[in-house]
Image (cartoon, rainbow, N blue to C red):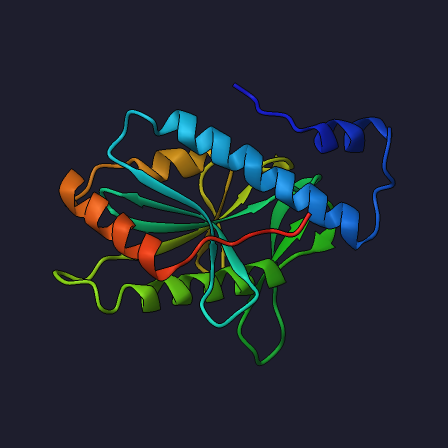
Length: 200
């Protein structure tokens, strides 16, 4: 099933609001987050997974779009509502290590990976006083639109770049965490990472 937003339709058809400016970009991003939240809630409803949406990073104005706690650990998922071909470019430089770059619609979007990494670090920090064994924290950059150019899992700088369906599959994989432990972890994160109230 495909979830489509009003802004997504506007963007494809050229109707309504112009496709530029910070207000439009913010609105487009917010609808992408809503689309992904609805998809994950539906796809994972019968799985041993707990979901949290829109959580504030402590001591920051930034937020985490989605956190999913599944049998293999915690997944920090950043939703992006961009269009165009999603590709990895590898840049080779003489006397230097190769650099991986994420391109979407022909534009360099590698900075998104760095932003997601900070979200992962904040989630790890929130789990430091959780009792029991250490819980793995994974990050994923999820594009609700856009076209992937190859089969298989795409990674840039070690970060998976995924579609909503692949995100749901990864979160629901079998692992060592019991349903009770998953609930405990989710409740702990809910207390540590407060809701993020977006200004509209």
